[in-house]
Length: 453
Image 1 (cartoon, one colour):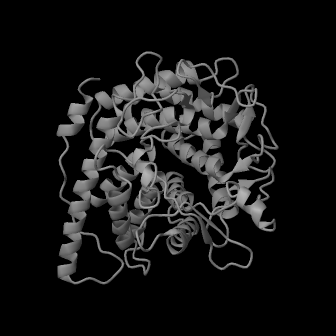
Image 2 (cartoon, rainbow, N blue to C red):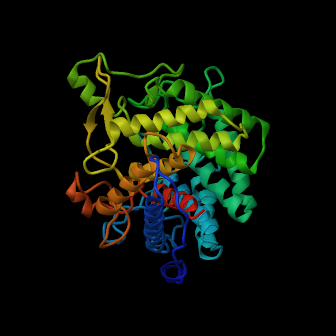
Image 3 (cartoon, rainbow, N blue to C red):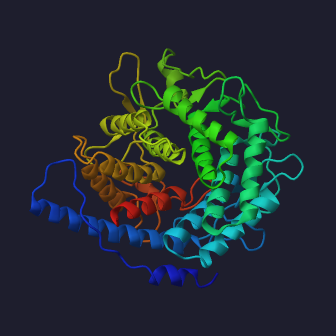
């Protein structure tokens, strides 16, 4: 593993790219400007991507207890308890596998992915009851929550996601079998045969917590969209009829039930998909419950991409219903969640009763939402090159924002959030159980694939 940093620092060079029209009619001179602009962005994105992987690996590999370290400070030093969550562990497997294909680098990154698969199989998978543990300590001992071991559909989804991508990248049959086992476990313990979709919480032995866990309701958009994401990845390599049925159903639930008429996702639901809302409560109650009831612009713009990805994997052809829904989500985000002065997406909005537009209730701008915006905006610029939303212009604005306020020019990597809003983010952790390289590397690679066509 010692040669990994050297490899990433030296082998990859910027690739020239061709022009892409923006939403506005352009002269020949303007097209030349766009081409030059694309080359600059491509070069910058390549540099950021390569730096990203050289910083994460081999630093994050725990060669003593397995898996990946979680806690990394702003100077890229290991610092903290190093608990290990299934989400982050699996995301490293996905990111390494995905980058290995894009960079045509099957050596070091394959070793990184295999290191992660071994930890998922030997430590995170519950050999007694099946399913993946949600959180373990550094040595791999499961951590209890409120006195019990709780498993989550969200965490199992990311395990399926990473393992499926590893199989697609390297043909690792062990990874595929484990992904299939996880899907079957979710089908048995998490799937709601009455109302559709999946319960987020389960006991260790797999009993679904149909009323939720603690104050958190039993179903939500975040686990649903990432279940959609993982089933999409698994279906690419395993054309199982039941898997296809579940993927199709989940796409329809997210598109037609979770998404409001305005074009944003409701966050939490009861078992029968009744939305959880505090809109009619007092201002104090609403504010105390924003975690359960607000507009999450980052999730909305990410879901637009995930829905279209699922539709493509299902072979739905010209799925205009999903395309319209995805565009509506992106447009709602741009109209209501974009900081038009500095750039970047705000983290949260709220539709108070009678409002035609949401108020911004969380002005912070977390790193993952900024990365997902890059991906979806460039995607929309290709799907709708002449649209009045001018997606490519907004993509350029978003990348400029990331370079100025989210990507660390001194130490490398991405701040927790934009320093235009929270200057102290310069000293925020580069890694945690919630922060890895999944959102950023996926966005950069997807954008580079489009820019370099």
